[in-house]
Image (cartoon, rainbow, N blue to C red; front, side):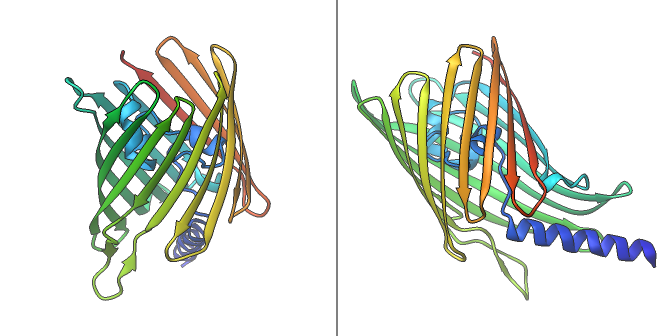
Length: 281
């Protein structure tokens, strides 16, 4: 009886934390900038934020890990691989996001999203370009003792680069408004993100973003990235609704990239994010 009670508390606490504090951030770079990443995304993780950003990605891979809200039983694991196609056909990417709630070697709940995306440059001149991207997502939910449930969603994104320094971007998550469940259907996240990124001079990028969850309130976020010297990048960012303060850094060792971010919340425990990436070219 005691074991059942503990399991029940863990599941309820996890559900409440993730419902109130939407902390599904696959990228430590994005979290370090407060989540203002829609106009900045340019690596394999763009697959999860704005697939149009894949058009700037090279052949590379990213792995991520976090214990959400500092809870050891709540593990968030991600992986993304981007491959640049020949003849200006854009970049193809595949990825996965998995959030697991475990207790004594038993998986109580597992949320999985398997993604396939493509980003391509539509128009380009000396100073400007416009890119389009789209991602198909297969959602799967597993709970101990229950039958698995699944759904398919579609994401869409556009990025416009002007004068080589300013990016305007928007992305829509789950544009087809996929639902999960049979009798009691649950709406999967459906969000519109609008972002602006500006690089006033080389090695410094600022970004602000507005994100509207069509089922909840609007989020505002902003961040800055600076590269004081070649192997290091540092980031700071804030996020409103929920209010978080974020910081992070990346270290570049040849083709290897190590990303870290720290997210502080006034009520919930803090979260540490880690990414490991490798560029093959």
